[in-house]
Image 1 (cartoon, rainbow, N blue to C red):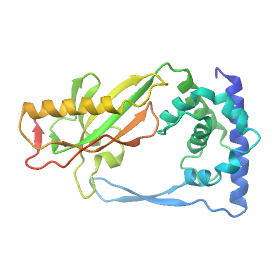
Image 2: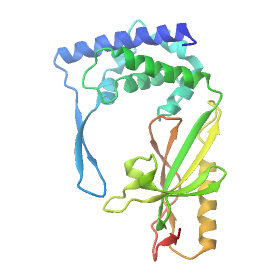
Image 3: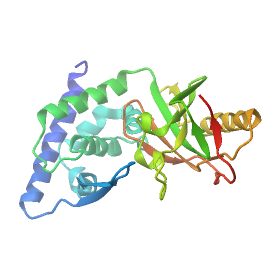
Image 4: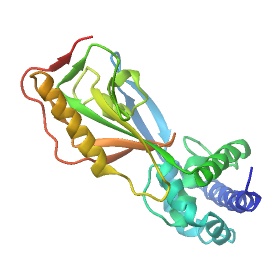
Length: 257
């Protein structure tokens, strides 16, 4: 820990929030759940996920009025934008960053007792985000019609083609609706400073350049998905609109081993 004042301010807010949320549950408030399908090559599995983020959002007006909230927001200050990006959100205000911290603190949790060990891990993420001089971004976009006979095809400049099932990627990017086969994707990795905006236009240009080179290399039907997924450092994946896309028509574009 390098910033004791920030640590104590965020901990005070998290403690007060934990007490408020726990009191609501004890008073009869119900934590909603979602049923998720986990697609794969075999049978579909189901799991229940507590919607703690929605529960917190419904009570945010009361949480932001807690005595410790203003001090926590002031301590976080200009680091809010960098932390929000790591958590897969946009903005530069401290309040959304505090809410994102609570979401992270109670992610997949069934109760709101204050989790001391998890708080220390979450705080370490906050502090690392604020102290790092850059953030590592990963973009993933499915390519319709692409088939690879190798798991990874490095292209240089942070770009690669990859079989979706062998990389750390969100299921929605790998398993198309109604398809029993995992998608192949283009992946871009780059570093930006915490105060830079998300370089979506640059990412789209790089993916278009890859697609153009593939079409020149050999014939076959290829198309980029209109949506991509991005995350900062090891934060959650966030879906973003990449631009016009389409569906591949004709024979698949196959890259042999």
